[in-house]
Image 1 (cartoon, protein in one colour):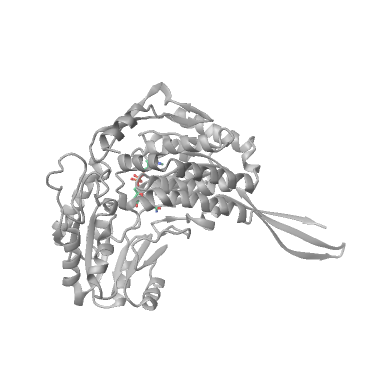
Image 2 (spheres, rainbow, N blue to C red):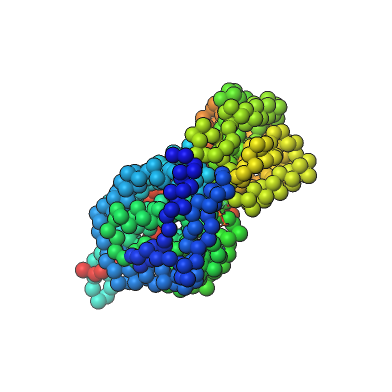
Length: 501
Ligand code: NAD
């Protein structure tokens, strides 16, 4: 479908929020503008909710938890609901793809993560609903007292946490929300979802799919969109909310933690990264250049776990720089443009304010004395849309701002190391601890290096391994884990029930 067609069909739609089982406008009919980042054209207006709208959604989720049947539904019911949602997403996959292209700027190269993985995750949570140990008997014990002896029976019950406030981000929007909705539903919680102001439409699309596919009781799932921070602040501070799961920056994550402190609300934080990618040897530099440089073009570097600090052995530094710059500088391969064109490898960044922030980082790299090898500018001939060139710096010292702070744009920093101890030290010299990558021919050596890295994930010979495993950060990259069994536990309170016989 052409971009023009996408724009007109999205514009024709009056998107509504979903609160307490009904499609509603924001109070006063307020909306805000959602542009296509590649064309800057209006994609559609989105409902711009007020604090009052958020309060209604929270009250609905509270009622559904305290009085409704969902928290006491069976694992079979939950599995059936999750399968129905996954099947409906599969059936409407092309709509999802078009909206992800138009709203998130998602190029085809990212669609396995953007489009396919959310469906796989939901199917996996359906399976987990059936296999998860909601109730576990513990070994019997005895109590002996002068008054008599008895047997103690006991079990652990994994109970739902309650009302969950889910705040996903915009870069891989369906992937991120599927990793929250999936385990939250599978464990019997109710929820209010507050999408990023940059990604409301794909969330409302998913709300529509879920409403059509699943016979969830009213109030179990609510979606509130808006551009102001006050609706998020209401969600994270309202006493009726039991748990917050947030994906976003450290700055907002720590504000959420502070807001949760007075009532000790459960908080799960999936925050940013400044991941190191360690190149172990110089074999096959042509083969590994695309992986080493991927943060400079893949989704325009807007990923939390991208290897934006590339650490190369000093002996092959210049060859590595040449191969990496050669790859990203080749416009026949790294074609920049509208993601609606399947041959485009690199699309825009999400908004003008984000592009300016990235340009600020590029200026700081130059000022600090890093060598700008390629990129650093807005691409010629693309005057509309928030485009940037893939950018590579070399000669970067790890204390430079471009090596310490998350840029969340298409910028890679190359730093040379003398031996593996130094590579590990540089990799770990970061406030972040989300992920790391290792590329090399000796897999045993790579696994040994991996164990020395202080990050939640380490990917060897790949730049981002999707799986149903745990994902989350050490250090300032977050608290908790998403994915698989680990994600299920995040949405449970552990209850011990003991009785005497
Ligand atoms: P952000 O921190 O700017 O978050 C914006 C969201 O926070 C919006 O929904 C906004 O309404 C809300 N918000 C604003 N003020 C608030 C407050 N005081 N209390 C509560 N909520 C408030 O982040 P972003 O731009 O949406 O996302 C980019 C970040 O997300 C990057 O740092 C990236 O690394 C990270 N990220 C992490 C993961 C992961 O799984 N670890 C995945 C993707 C992205």
